[in-house]
Amino acid sequence: MKSIKIFAPATVANLSCGFDVLGCCLDNVGDEMVITLVSEPGVKITKIDGADLPKETHKNVAGVAVEALLEIYGKNVGVHIEIYKKIKAGSGIGSSAASSAGAVWAVNHLLDQPFTANELVKFAMEGEKLASGNAHADNVAPALLGGFTLVRSYNPLDVIKLHTPKDLTMTVIHPQIEVKTSDSRSVIKHDVSLKQAIQQWGNVGGLIAGLFTEDYSLIGRSLEDVIIEPLRSILIPEFKAVKEAALSKGALGCGISGSGPSIFALSKGKETANLVAEAIREVYSKTGLDFDIHVSKINSQGVKIIT
Image 1 (tube, rainbow, N blue to C red):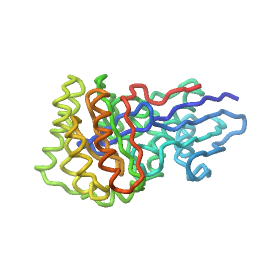
Image 2 (cartoon, rainbow, N blue to C red):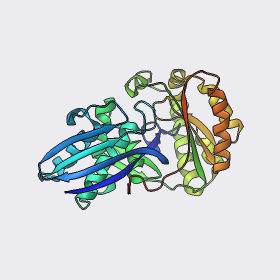
Image 3 (tube, rainbow, N blue to C red):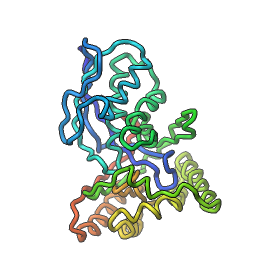
Image 4 (tube, one colour):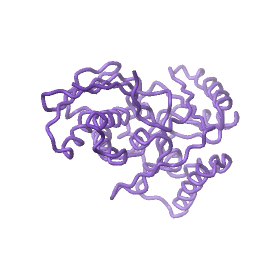
């Protein structure tokens, strides 16, 4: 038997302007998993701690993702998976992606890495398909590659790791309500105006350019969503007040993390990120809702082994 314990990071997807194509990886928020190769072929979820999730392999995102990997690997392999959930389901910071990405990364490592990180993205997407009905990669890609990632194309899959300016720090507030990805997708319009599309792809290009040139002002100007945020924000209590508070304390930009209800604010430097955290804490303390706040640098590595 070979076994490893890994950290499977939380992620922030979309980053305002990049619906389903942009994401980044957090450093101090994530799940832990123990993956073991065993002699008996097949994939089994042997333990889940911290969440009420199905242990049946075909109903669990980690199990489905690993089965997709093993189908292509083409050899009889036995895998046992233990999941220690610290990212709440429906939080908007990549709970299903952490399980899917973490599981395939660990199995690939134990098999002496027959697949590249980019190839693992496709397997992890099968877990996302089970979770939300849509095989999107904007969470699993940064979890596997680390840092910021762009999904240039889904057919064929083309994922690109972007540059990460070292001073960027993320503040995330997670209200203790659940917004299902499927529900959040249901409010989105499938047709947009040409004017909106031009604004949006201009912001995507600006954000990517800002990351590579470390132009923090350009990054901030580009964190604007004219298509998805106006529709999804109505599902999140006090979204507008949180955004105003974050920007007033110097955040470069603020938006919905994934499908919500989490809200992210991106700042230059930890000091500003902490000021933003206090400002949004003050807003949410008046709501009567429970919430968590995370301040994290960007994780440039992605999934990693822990001891």
